[in-house]
Length: 156
Image 1 (cartoon, helix red, strand yellow):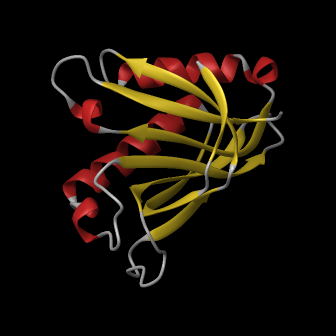
Image 2 (cartoon, one colour; image 1 turned 60 degrees about the vertical axis):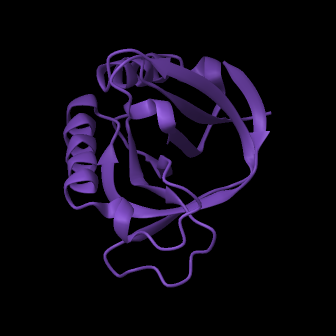
């Protein structure tokens, strides 16, 4: 794991509002990813920087039960956020300090397991609950040895 300041960027994609309750979260995110793939969202995103996929978690709101409501947006990094198609949304990742975690193995279960571990360590991580994101590059969807990165916003 690595801690560093990352530069700001924006993505365009599709979003869902969910909660950190594990059962609802898993169902909502699986539907989001299914829609992203089945509707070929990556092909309609304008001004893509590349075809890497990013899932941004932002707009965290703590509930009375101790869980968080959060918006998840799956899309691609863009060079500009003008001319966003009406069916898509924008998410912005601010310049901030992020703790990076590499995840490899059986996907998506390895990602779910890593998030479960991270939620258990919330207080130790010194999280900002501003913005977190997942980065899916070339190796992320490989049939052998897939890997991706999770970036958690942390305080200095």
